[in-house]
Image 1 (cartoon, rainbow, N blue to C red):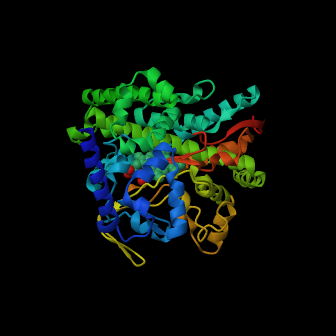
Image 2: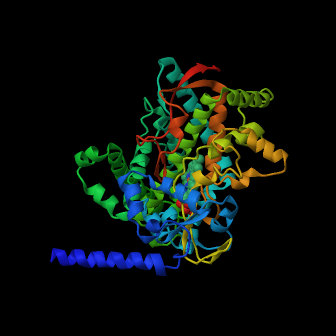
Image 3: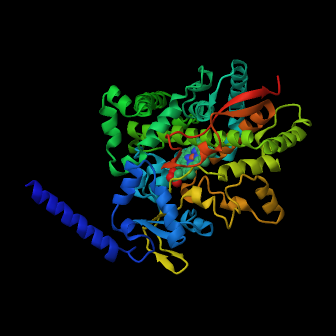
Length: 500
Ligand code: HEM
């Protein structure tokens, strides 16, 4: 019986591999045969070796060129000029790859919605909250949280505390996004030692990301395991599972509040918008609210925390860059009576160049964020069939030497020099991806980055502790990059307080 089963499975697997190699619509596309035949290699490198397949994909591009078949049904490209065609908006329909969508475990969240039209609908429920105008309205709250951060960092200076970058900035991002989502902040900044459980929860999710692609039911399975078993496997996963219960509670509360309240009242929070009376009942189930809530918490938290950590790392590593930032900011603040606003900061060329270069340099987005175009795409001599999964690794494109010469060098000046030549490098800055499924929180992210960097530059000298720029170089890809020890970012301390 068992032998018969093995024979059937082997025959099926062989038949599938032969189909993939010789009869699949992608059979003629360049790439190694072992990658085209089955998913075994990807499973091995990502699940068993811990996020190593992105390095294989980079090697494939070096060997086979800008368009490669990296698994039976997926292409990867390494050409910044082609980006806008794949990550398109407007009338071009872009679906998600079902396998990749399952990785987050948030099956009904906007980011995981496979169907193009349903995705547009879901994104539309909250899109207004992320417009530039809405984020300008939110600016006093963001500034207030940044001010709390500054006070907490001053305390850390006096106590000589070593700070973990992603936990400090995760606390800031968490307090802002939870206030916006639920109308009450989680008050992470006020907790001693910046524990930021939420950030650990995101890490727990990311560490199980690849396994979830192959075993989509894993999330449910993990939530049923006793906590001591989980803690033995990976403590950060426990935090993630505990968070699940907390988010469910918030979802139920939001739904009840809306049902009991005035149905014509304007939505004050993201949650109010998600339970709007005009939205149909199947779109307001507890599960959907939970999924969307997780998306907003996670998407708005770890990303911002990581890039602010990169910025601290660059300021501490390149004192000449910090000096230029400080001089430019001083020339602005000397003429102001109050703190600079986001709009005033955005107009500063060197600060903008610094933020752009930090979003590019060693970009910790090692995942592919693939799209599934519903129309055929033409790339050079190739016609890519409709419904082919295709993506690009932001980390790779942002290191493309044709667009960013000497890409491993951190040089904000490249953005200013390009502008002076009439070139707009910004169009190649794809850290937030592009098109109909690009980051919805981009305005919020920029407001947080500008206001936080300005506050850090004006108030502090920082130095790295037991860490260096090496700690932000991607070693593992778990959707986002990690170092060899499954951490990301640098530890630092405040070495001098400049104001107050
Ligand atoms: C530096 C900070 C940030 C970066 C670099 C970033 C980057 C990204 C990227 C690359 C995606 C596309 C993922 C995909 O294609 O599957 C995305 C999606 C998304 N981001 Fe961000 N993000 C940042 C901050 C934020 C913030 C603060 C929020 C606020 C809640 C946010 C909310 C979202 C949402 C809701 C999506 C899903 C959009 C959709 O599927 O239509 N992000 N982000």
